Image (cartoon, rainbow, N blue to C red; front, side, top):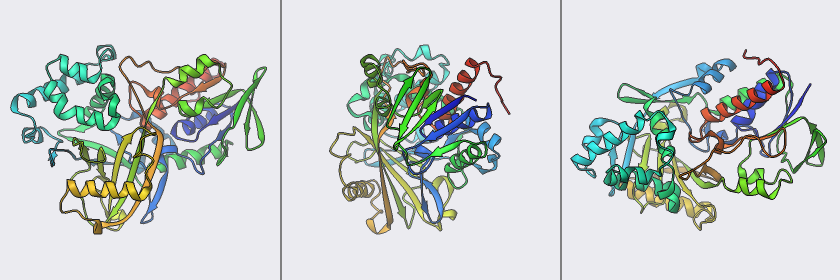
Length: 435
């Protein structure tokens, strides 16, 4: 029986473990955290598991839906009508329907038409080759949509990617527009959320993996990997494990530390960079807005997104509380990223009060703050998807960078894991078990 070590117990790592076990491999999973799920990590609010980083999935997420069905948890998938707004010029505008666009005064009539035409133009481009040669800014300006870029998209890109915003590939936006277009039912966007959080998926995978004989080593960081002849030796917590294959799901930064790679390969990994993220969760005693998702187009605010979770899933499970996420993307070396929790919460609270003058600190019952350094892959013009194969035979790497042309998400973590597992199984002349 071939032995596999998987590093990282996020969605990709769990899916890999599940597939490899189903096809007759011996599997061990190493995770430096205390639990499984990676970015699906949760805290308990009013007895409900709630992700520390907001999540939803789309109607078009076929790999996710199929896996949930296979695990017998498809009944946990709940679909809701979404609502969206855009905050700019000190005002919140509904921004989820054609009627909302007509009422959006920052764009004049001509630019409203240009906005619609630009969206339809991008959504009709089914071939990535039509978009990958442009930065988003270039494409909008070259096609006479400069004002649309300046008023709608530029603030969002700057608040997401700061000084790199002008060089972000058009592919990044194009894929998002395609995905959201496929998640509409009539004029409404429908989104999926799992009963008792998406951690239900991670929990179910863990249970199935253990049933099939997979072993988890939690709170166990892999220190290094060596290869002796055709066998890998994985060192972690003063123990050594041998394996025929090693599958890493770490970030490019973490991956560099795993093995004594050549300088050329180290430099290759360094090309794949990330923005850091800060996410606060506010437990409120009343609603903040009417919308699930509010994009921020105002540089004066200290955050880029406000996501009112309970405007999607309702308040019943939270005993009437409002659950509000406030997020910001930034460089991990910035002063703001390194502020203390109390300082960031204060800045975010002041920003919320500026957005909504009726909001005040007395509505905050509790706050939580989370930070992640390697949160958002940076996809610049000319981006090349990284190789799954490393320079070391049978040592593989998949990450949020590998999901290109898509942006990170549960669906694409599953998809990349499925592709890698199939590739390894086929290379060993094993008939794939699809049941």
